[in-house]
Image (cartoon, rainbow, N blue to C red):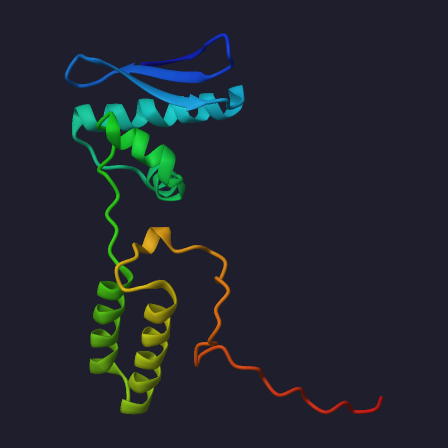
Length: 157
């Protein structure tokens, strides 16, 4: 059983008693009541699964997969989930190219290696995959995989 409380500043906290009989708190910040109740239900479900050692159902697993990194870290801090693991761009691309080398033709592998080299030049080898920005940063040298496509001639129509 979990409870939702709100302090005088409007910050929402979910409290529950874990399997070790200790009270745990998850601070959500300023969220509306609907979001707070949804998270509370998921916290109750995760806590029950943890205590009974049962597997997650599909709906709960889908919700956990879609949770942002901040909330996931809070759920992991109270022991409801395992912390998310992240690898570096260099390690991921090395493993990706090695897998493709076994499956694809040599020219395809060469193209994949070229893109991997450009990505590493753009972002760096040691950057975490979760920290790469969604928008492409401005660069002075355009990578080989970003080319200007020729404009088709107009049909005059």
